[in-house]
Amino acid sequence: MSGEKPQFRAVILAGGSGERFWPLSTPERPKQFLRVFGGESLIRQAVSRLKGIARAKDVFVVTSAKLATATRRELSELPAANVVGEPDRRDTAAAVALGVGAAAPAAAKGDPVVGFFPSDQMVTAPERFRDVVRRAAAVAARSQAVVVVGIRPSCPSTSFGYINPKTGAFFEKPSERRARAYLKQGYLWNAGMFIARASVFRKLFAKHAPDLCVLADGVPVPAALRRVYAALPRISFDFAVMEKAERIRVVPGDFGWDDVGSYGAFDRYFPHDRRGNVREGPCTVVDSEGNICVARSARISLLGVKNLVVVTTPDSVLVADKSRVAEMKRLFSR
Image (cartoon, rainbow, N blue to C red; front, side):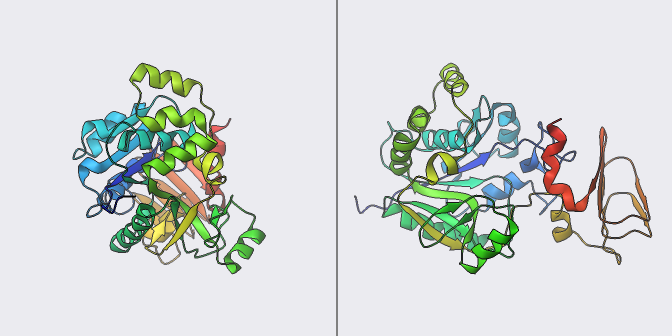
């Protein structure tokens, strides 16, 4: 392996469907476009915190073809060709393969380190994030391993997968009892951040998911891309590759990471009144506590209720028990 330091390229995975924050987010404007947390859209924050690690020309986005124009508009500093649209949703295995092909085509010179990052998460300590990514990229540059950024858990969450930092073994979302056991064993949360040389990703696809090799080698022309996607199964990168990979290194991260995966995030990022209500927009709250109210159109008025999420937009209203907002996808399965 050459002693020359390889280039680093970043790929943002931005295939959100707009379900978890409906009706604030929709399929046409999914979660990564929300400007609710931190002032800027989540996808803008995902790109901004890479400054100093990757130049704009070395940042790529894999998104839905339907969202490609909106993504280019949101991230106008990126070359237009760096935003790649998937013709269909096939989960993260296909998205990662396409990202490798976009950021480091097999026909191009060199073997850059490629890092994959979600588009819809919060990081409150971006400099610490950059330090962790630099360390992970350095490990990837001098090895044949996939480096995973693991997040130190703050609670026994059942909403995240876990990683054994000693062995690199992956574990799917557990029961609460098992999550508590994972914490005692020092396991970390899987935040969906993977870093490796492009050649390492290609070898893993060739061994464990050969039908994705055509994407990892380079982005096919649109007609060919549609044909490839039409034949692909829906499968995550974890299931297709990472659970079978033999060389995994884990770099722990502690940089204020937050999945902001449901309306419960409003309790963490917005002020509360004296009875624990979050109120955004025109809201009247009487004898009520622990509610999240987000009024983007019609006024919200609450009387004598507890622990609700109520959201109004120009065309929709959501009323949900706050303890069940993690089940939002059930609203779209009927």
